[in-house]
Image 1: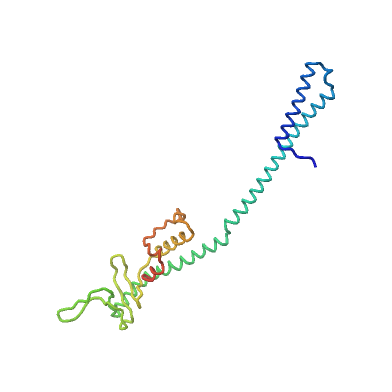
Image 2: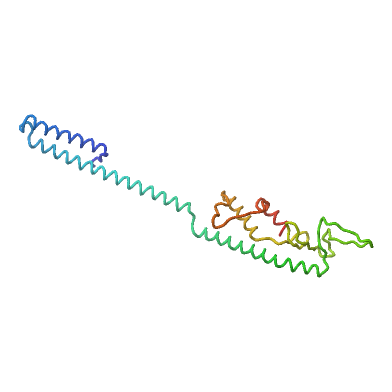
Amino acid sequence: MAKTLTIADAEQELTKATGTLTALKAKILDKGPGSVTAEELGEAVHAVEHAKLTVEHAGQQAQAEADRQRQQHLAELKAEILDQAGDVDTALDAMQQIETAAAVLIAACAGRQRNITQWTAALRQAGVPRYEAGGKIRTHADGRTYGPATELTDEHAGMGWSDAGMGRSDAVHVDGRRLAHLSPGLVIAAALERAARTAGYGVRYLHPAIEVHSTDRAAIDNPEAWLRTRY
């Protein structure tokens, strides 16, 4: 198998052959045509032409090797991209899970906001008193007491109601649970911020399509405890 020269080796051979040809031409001019035979001059000319072709061949071989390496690099890069990009089915499934979960939260919270007003009215009509755990009980001059119930009793089936106040909505109290108005956006925003934290990114990665404005850090830091006091 013929040895493939590097471009540097081929160019060195061309320089050598060109030098030989130049020297022969100079010798003819200096000492006359009899100093160099036609065969010697012809061989020198052919050697230069051969060296030029060798340089061209080496360049083509180097380019072919560069192209091969580039294709190999692109193939490796493509495999890396496809491996790390994930697949459409996984993304679609996750998107559908978010859609389903958000629909559950929106329906539950929106439905609750309608129901609390109806439940509060029904409890009042049934004679269930307003409930306030830390409320003050006052006494009329005739000895009758008035004010909110401070405990949920069996007399009223463990239920009570409370009016909206500073930072809180109307609520219905059932067996220790406080059922109040709850914005589904607040719950979803907290969930999205927790999701971004779990993934190792900030909520800025949801911009510009979604701007998360979480107003209650407790909902993000401990959603279970937060929900149990409101839901």
